[in-house]
Length: 185
Image 1 (spheres, rainbow, N blue to C red):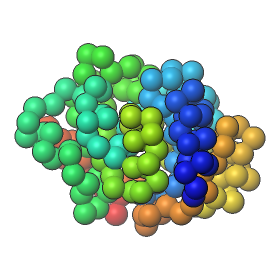
Image 2: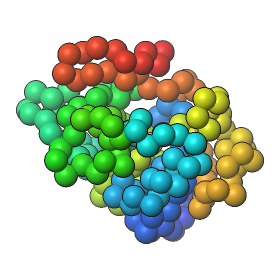
Image 3: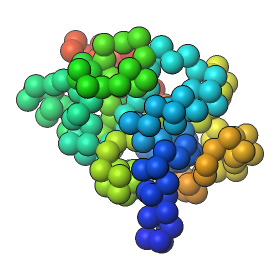
Image 4: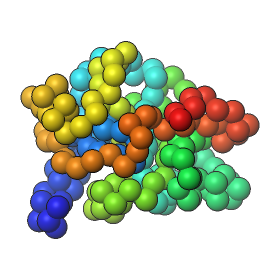
């Protein structure tokens, strides 16, 4: 992907675009986390209840820090990508928007070294909202063509590429007690 095209995506995301993109696990829907209307669009596309909350996907913990309330030990655990993509449930900061946490006192955060996500996060200097590219209760789209065919008219754009994962969602783990909420393997 050329720098010119990437910069167009970054500018659109900063302005509130809703898009689909290949992640470190599966194809996802995303937007800038501070755009409430964009998050609402994603929830409408997915037909997902807002109470469930969403994941923040970030290339660096620093971008997610305004959304979390963590100490040094937790910061170390979150700061580096895990061998298996793992999303951690961590206490949400007082400033974390309710449209991200839903009905929970926690926020789901995953740090990844996926090259596309690194470039997008660095461009907007923030994490990305991330949720699987599907309607609630339905299988996630598995590639660019499926995403485009099923959701293209509802999105501002679809970023081409390939997900780096197994086609399965990430493991979700509670940072507080280590409990596995979703295996993902």
